[in-house]
Structures are given as structure tokens and as C-alpha cells.
Length: 112
Image (cartoon, rainbow, N blue to C red):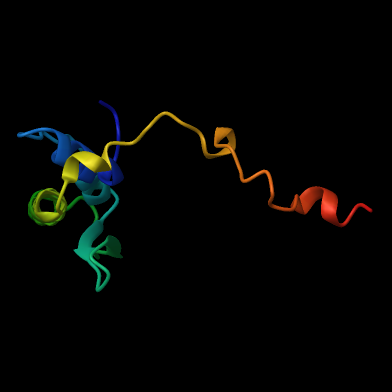
């Protein structure tokens, strides 16, 4: 399945094991960006000053650790939720859901 961090809770709730591949830790290291977990739990990028031509091995290792921690937290949180199998998305579009026939239509109400 192709998805991002936002797909992890759904997948982790539906499967016993999850393998997540991501290149953002590497790409951010190449662009001298450190991944840091913010107060809201999301990863943010912070510029990392390096000398020209300096290796990014240590920065890459830190970014991989930050990403691994975030992914593991998402997996653990999704498995702690009761009835995680109810988190599986449906194919039904909100536009195709039937509305209450007695409810006034917002598009026609102002037209008269």
C-alpha cells in the first residue's frame, strides 16, 4: 500500500505487523534539515548548519531515529484504541450519502 504517516493508524489497526519505508529522513539530511518532534507530536524540520562538503551520516541517523520514534508511536496509539478495526476507511464518498429530505437545502434557500 502506498501512503504516508497518516495511513499508519488505519493499517496498524488492521494488521498484526507493519513495515514502513520512508525516504524523508534521508532527503531531509541531504538538505541539512533535522527532524524534530514538535509539541503536537508531529515532525518538524529544523535547519542544521554544516560545513560545505561535510558528511551527513550523524544527521541521517538522528533523522531515522526521529522518524522511527514517530512511526512506532502512531502504531502503538492505534493499537491501544478500542475497536481499531472500525478505523478502516470506507469507499463511500460523503457527497453520495443521502441527506434528510426534510432538511432545507442551503443552495436553494437563498435563491427564492
